[in-house]
Image (cartoon, rainbow, N blue to C red; front, side, top):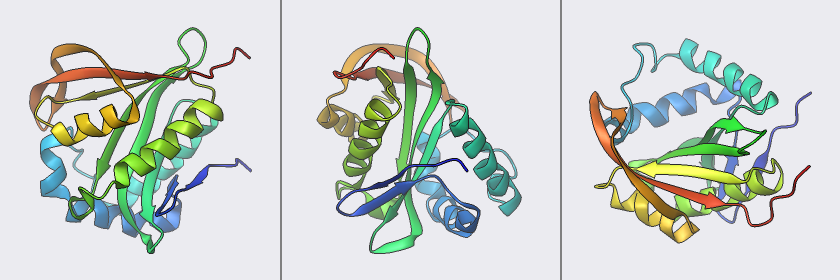
Length: 188
């Protein structure tokens, strides 16, 4: 059986979803729908259904087993049955670039408490040390200062500005492009 990571921080549990988490992930996205909508792509019609998330969980496990993605969800140790955020490493490439793209979200009531920094610090450590990736790319909309501050605090370097980069909430949005390099990368 595939061993998936469970990352523990002082306040958080960061892990892939399991089938019993479907109600918790549905509650997270439903309760934070209005808050997250301006920062995310338009969702498929069945996004808020049990069937969609049951399939997503299986897909995430398959992608992880083939080194294609690592889709983690954030739980508070104080309430381990409640999803409070996500941190996804997608577009994983081994070979020449050993890189991935980072995306994340956090519940509205979790903002300003350092949860995202704490979760990302642990997750990036895992991606660099256990998966041996060399580079993590993360992009944010210029008006999303919280996101920019989290990345800066984690040591991400601004590399550029992309106009009309991603289709977010039905509108092409500019993004600031950043990356973090693994200082301990080893050729295998």
